[in-house]
Length: 97
Image 1 (tube, helix red, strand yellow):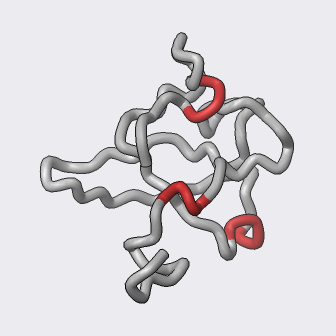
Image 2: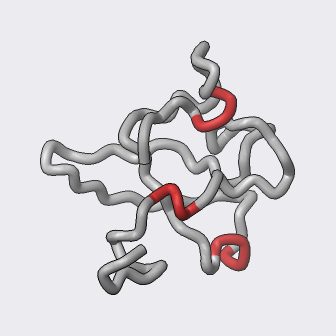
């Protein structure tokens, strides 16, 4: 951080957010999978201008699980742990943050 950036600033490097929220030590998966990181919430889709509107509900997460955490949007589509790439079961091979 620098130049007046704070942890809530949009200029904080995304790697500072850490790994997926995974308190149970699971492999990467999709939001409907029995075995997944608790923070695996699936894909959102943006329009041509890069704007997205979405609402997420998750039966496994409670509001107190996410207070103080970040939502990170990766550059590419998450394969939800179903791909053949070595990163599939780790990050969904979704590219850089």
